[in-house]
Image (cartoon, rainbow, N blue to C red):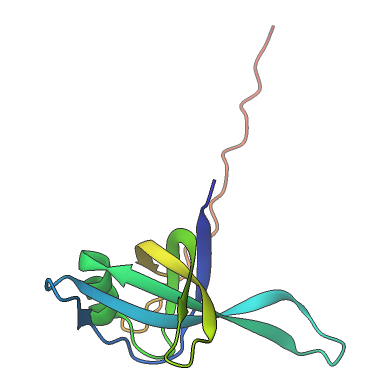
Length: 126
């Protein structure tokens, strides 16, 4: 099984590109905090390369910008290529199947709901 769920921040504004047959796609990177802090008390960050296609790419480009928190679902894909100097490069990236909002910066803060009180059980006879 190859399934990835990530929550992170987009590192730069997303740009849509088109393939030769006019299919939209975008490449972007998200910064994902690691769970634990290092010896200096700093949280380490992993920068994860992602690719989205078609409507998912358009959605991400339209609603997310640099610094936005995003949740993504997808799978890991690896590929390689040789450059003009015959040097082989290996790439690992997440192919995004779905993206969702993790926070809202435009919506007003929700007011806290009052604490719900559970009714007490009524005494009964046996």
